[in-house]
Image 1 (cartoon, rainbow, N blue to C red):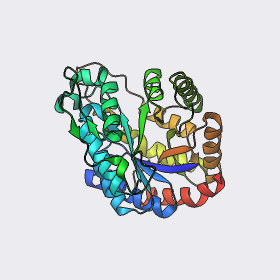
Image 2 (tube, helix red, strand yellow):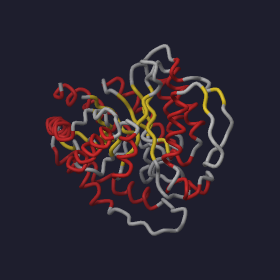
Image 3 (cartoon, rainbow, N blue to C red):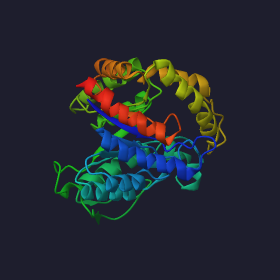
Image 4 (cartoon, helix red, strand yellow):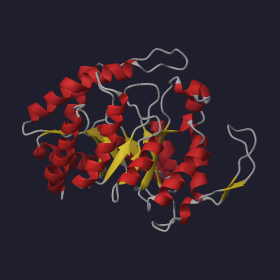
Amino acid sequence: MRVGAFVLAAQFPGQGQGEALHRAVRTAEVAEEAGLDSVWLAEHHFVPYGVCPSAVTLAALMLGRTRRLRVGTAVSVLPSTHPVALGEQAALLHLTSEGRFTLGVGRGGPWVDLEVFGGGLDAYENRFPEDLDLLRRWLTEPRVGTAAGGRYGFREVAVVPRASEALHGDGTGPELIVACTSPASVRLAAERGLPMLLGMHCGDEDKAAMVDLWRRTARAAGRSPEADHVSAGVCQLADRTADARETLLKAMPGWLKQGLDAHVTVDGRQRAMRDPVAYTELLCDLHPVGTPELAADRLAATSERTGITRFALLTEGSGDLAATEENLKRLGAEVLPRLG
């Protein structure tokens, strides 16, 4: 089992954006010291829910600050960038980090980002499969061109640098994973043999069903039915479970309300927002929030029920730098040994 930290760079009420980013960078440094496997970096635009607008840029910094830790994006929003530009950045990080980089991509949401970056609503609703396939080609082929008529049309060009020419690794380039939130996205990933990143709002039953659908779809497409999926969650540790829950229930609802309320849709559609307190309570119920013993039991149970062995756990839910660092250290010292 491999356990990593999920980094949102969340801006809690009363905090500055620089403070949130400093906590994000420290999370990577302390995660490596604590023996965690990885960090996974979220990407958001124009909202305090997360103040990192470029997961690949922050990944580059964290790869430079660490020596062993794997660093992944969770996720880079594909409709808001050009697949070739993202592929070039991913290849660069893969080659210069000795294969420690994972590129996670997702469709994002119908936010005003699509207007600002020029993709439009069509990029969100219809173009994600085309973008994903162009990105995959860039990461695996020596030369790439596209036919006229699609979202992108360009003559054949050389892929430089080629991710497959890394001095370390298996010669296949960086790992590519897809954020999946619906049966359609599960099938999309499975047909291409790409692992899934499953969100922290899902319980074990839902994740097990998505893994089962992925396996059936992959098998039908002639792919291997096995993949190394990633489960996102929340982790808060304390000597008493009630204290861990109280820490999150004091800090997270204010951040969630401030962050989620700031999202603006590109087409004016109405959004049904989660109740911040109820959502925090749900996350506490679903994930390793409590004593180290409880946390280890919950991770082991999720792995047994779903077959997932990689975890990306939000450890900054207190909103406090010192508490986040302590949370990471306890995760490494008191939970990981119990997982074997």
